[in-house]
Each structure stands twice: as C-alpha cells, then as structure tokens.
Image (cartoon, rainbow, N blue to C red; front, top):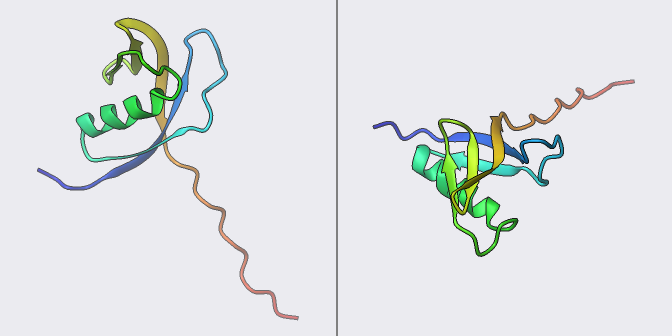
Length: 88
C-alpha cells in the first residue's frame, strides 16, 4: 500500500448553477475514504444536521439520500514565481 498523499481542491456547486461554494475545499488525502470524510466535513457547514454521502464515482454529493450537488477536483493554484533580483 502506498503512503503518498494527494493535494487537490474540490469545487462544489448545485447542478443547475454555475456559482460554486466559497472558499473551495482544500483536500489532502491518501485514499478514497479520507477524500469522502474531508468533503463531508466541508459540506456540514452548508448542510448542518443532515446526512451527507459522497459518491466519488459520479462526482456527486447526496444530502439525506437525494442528489443535491456536484463536485470536481482541481489542482491547487500554484504561486507565481517571483522575479529575480534586479541590479542597477
């Protein structure tokens, strides 16, 4: 079993809306169960007191057994390289 970790961002939005939840969910996971747990914790701030399930195969989030949200995983934004020192 490998022990590498994956760093991604999850962009969550309603199926018929282009507006995503902000801030994006910062993920750092090793396997599918860690991905599901982290994403479920993120969604609790929007769906408190409801049962949240993550379908990783379809990229969907189910709330109380009903399909409510889509999510996609993207690479985190890399910082821009700083220019070198300028000498006069």
